[in-house]
Length: 322
Ligand code: PBG
Image 1 (cartoon, helix red, strand yellow):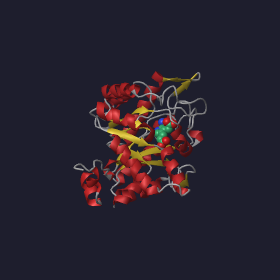
Image 2: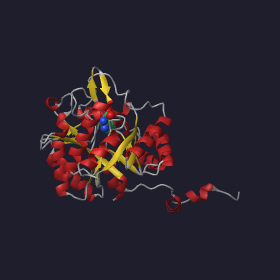
Image 3: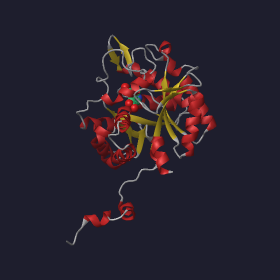
Image 4: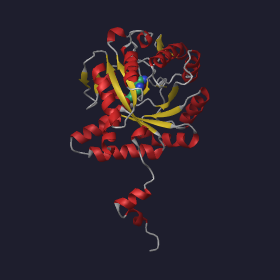
């Protein structure tokens, strides 16, 4: 035999030389859940080793992550039920603890990159990402609320705004309002292809943000569709998105690959709560090797085309690299 592919797999040194995909800690964004109770560190049942953090624990989590080279974070608020209303008005209220937390992190750790979440669900008494009127999600009436939330987040110091609501036209609306408010340099990472997925369950437990009625299928995408993701991609590009995201990641590697091939923008993928919980559960039972499976998952998402990964494994992966 003249040609033997195995020659390139002969030793770890040779495998390292020919390796096509590498994942650096700079490419990771760690999701963090924030709660109002200042000293809290509340376990989340369906998300082992993830917590609702009060401001003290949050600051120490950011500090230890930065020491590992992990410097990007996406923040989500766990809002008390009595603060929720139809219009999600707490999302841009002056006393909003989520906005205060972001401001405090940026004051203490200016090198941290903070990404927000724009959607009504954590603040809405209906638990939907847009405004519910007569049992319907009203797209156009949701837009000014989402933009107000985004401007408040930019004011608080978030570097990147993350609209996760899947309303039509929201990227353009938010871009315009950010510019009007004097935040031309605050970026937008659009949840471009966000699917109506069963893998968000643990996240909704973490925030107690599950819809009170119905489901999210009238705004999140049908898992059966891929060409529709390209349509969403074109719209988000035209509306001024800086980074495009696919969510979830593992069942949607083909979508990540398509967006990578069709867009010139950086592509992010969200390795969501259910994907994390699935591996944690298998590992806890001794059915999978957690470290090896985690590395394979994150590397595969990168190989598919993701430049950036949002993952609950971010800190574990960062530790492996040090
Ligand atoms: C809220 C939002 C969700 C997630 C991120 N932002 C849940 C949803 O759409 O119901 C899910 C993240 C995860 O599962 O890790 N709009």
